[in-house]
Length: 207
Image (cartoon, rainbow, N blue to C red; front, side, top):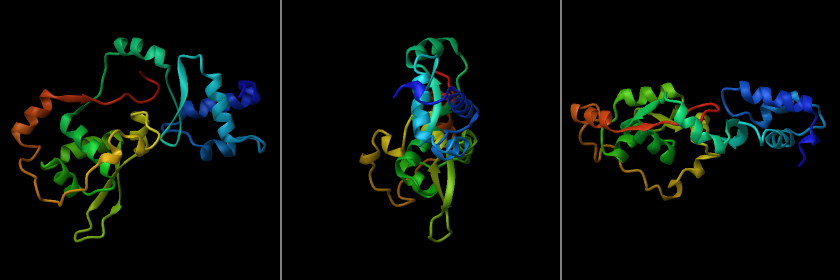
């Protein structure tokens, strides 16, 4: 498709919307802003071509569209940008478990990891916006069910949770309470976390 198939004014509107949105922009968001004869998917594709040679490019992720650093510039920017946000190892492990097995309860997270789950890890993941609660499991106590958010997909450049490496290899969830030994908030575990941290991808159009 040629980038001129869509009027420049429409491309500018779509570009501004994607730039300003805190989450991936879908056709449902863009559609109402377009003339009746223009399809949102067509506009996204045209904008993708329009931005192909720029420093930031349009990519499809998490069911919508976002701007990302051009792949050929990512390494150069990475060396220039020193500020990184890092997640402790325990928080990264919890995030991976939720991504692979969602939706699941806190007890199920602990059963899979074989270690107690500290509130600090959950609070940190909630603060990043990469997990959220989604209803409650219909069992005794009605525990909250945890899932990843569209922001998680966008952060890791995934189109859906099925693109997560190992998604189809995830094993059945162990029975809660079957193997949680030490608690991750114990002094030993805290020492492990401080020694091994994992870097979380940057948001927005950064490298």
